[in-house]
Image (cartoon, rainbow, N blue to C red; front, top):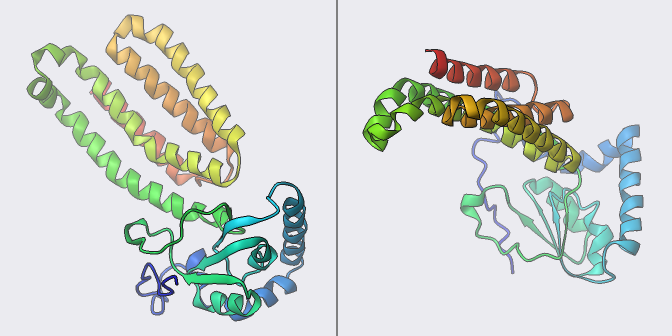
Length: 289
C-alpha cells in the first residue's frame, strides 16, 4: 500500500494570505467546486469536452489496448483518471490538493490516489515510479511562472558572482593557472557573460518543452550555431582565445534571444532585459575596463 501522507509539506499555506496566490496554492481547497466551475465557463467546458474527445481517440490508436502501470499526474478531481483507469492493471493518481483527491476517490473505483508533491525531489519517499503511461492535463502550462521566478533567483545569484569574477580575473588567473595564461585573461569575462545568460537560456529551453514546441528549440539552436560560426570565422583569427570565447557568447546570446522571441510570454520582459544588460556589462567591463 502506498503512503497516503503528504510527501512534501507545504508550510504556511493556510495562513499565507498576504503572499501572491500561485496556481498551486489556489487549487488546494477548490476540489468541491472545481468541476462546477469548469462547467459554468463556456471555454473550460468546451476544453473539457475536447480533452475527453481527443483522449478517446488516443485510446484507440496511440495507447496500447492494455496498460500495465498508469499515473495521472496532477490528477485533480479525476476527470482524466476515470477515462483510463479501466484500461490499466495498476492506476495511480497524485495531487497536492486534499479536496481534489476527495472528489477523485468518489468517482474512480480502481485507482490508488496519493497526496504528494512530486516536484520536491529532495523528499521522494513514495513508490510512484516505473509507469508505462503518464497523463498530466492542465499542469505544465501553469508551471512557467514558477520557472520564471526560479530563473530570476538564479540570475540574482549568478550576476554578482560574474561581476566579482571580472574584477578578480587579473589576479586570480596568474595565481591559479600560472603566468603562461595571463594573455588569456581577456577571454574569461566573455565566458562569465555567457554564464549570466544561462538562467534565461534554461528557462526558454524548459518552456519550449512544456509547450511541446521542439521547433522553437531547434530554431533557436540553429540561430545560435550560425552566429557562433560567423563570429568564430571573423574574431578567432584576430583575437585568439578571446575571439573564440566571444563567438561562444555570441552564439549563446543569439540562441537565447531567438528562443525568447519564439515563445511569447514565457519570459516576460524584465528577465531578458536584466540578463542581456548584465551580460553586456560583464563582457564590456572585462574587455574595456
